[in-house]
Image (cartoon, rainbow over all chains, first blue to last red; front, side):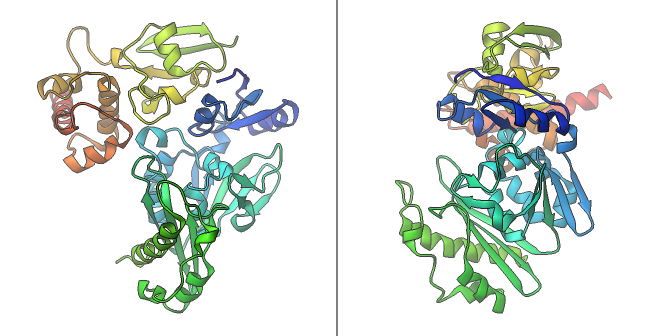
Length: 268
Length: 162
């Protein structure tokens, strides 16, 4: 790892000042992706601004019909939160399935979303549940936030402060893990609110997380795995293929995992 | 170089370090606490697991400077003098190790497991919770047995103390 200057603001105000002032900076959440990336010298920022000591960025609240989750809230905190478990159990389960226990003690929801790894779990849930990403500058709908593989709508100097997740949907996330890395080879989040169904797919798209419109239409008519019979799975030409799974295989897996997510969301 | 201060195994320590110094490097090179191991250096294997503010983390994927003011416990901080911690004793009794390289991380992960999930751990829970710790010798079977027994022993100790 190349050396860097380290900053540790204790308020969001200080962090706002630093991101505008410090040259070539990167924001550090839990560091579970950024630090390995820097060790491999795939990233070498001149400065890190560590957000983990800012109390106002952490914590989980229920506000009306929404869960409001601070950006530096760890996966372990989301997974074990009674609020989250009561409001959206599938969301708590998703957080409890990221990485391993030690990684979950460090990794943060804001970091995961800002990185938008094409195999990350949270982006699919945010997209399916219609979450809103709040930054120090504005609010961004999840549908506008995830703009492609490892890319988001965030501007330079923009800091995610919280994620607003609407409750009240039937929701489940299921993933087929790569047996070695344990990342999602295909992960599918399904959310049903009234007659509206959203299906978001991670791990497979060559341009990152995406919604599967044909499945949403079919499941909107009938929320049952059988509704997907005859629905063509996403075209392999838009999907990733690698030594672990071909694009055709991933396409097939999307169908399988969506069915499982529908079953889980139905509480069966 | 930034100065970092923290409490390691109950002792206040501080040093001037590069910002890029990992917690595991700080512990091994600065503090000479070489019980915490570096197995993979890519956050996979868990040989470097220590507790920071009571939670198990991978010290190879944590900056030392980010631990300013933190309370750190390493494998060296578990035993009470010459008396092994019940989890360490259970690993010995149940042969939960062969080469021993993964053992410090396994034991720190096991104690964290007990802290979060209690003294009565099922085999299934233990195997699932060990997702972040890799052992290349034992096939895990005796590690699982050791953790189950160690957890129960920790519970027994708590009862005895009350």
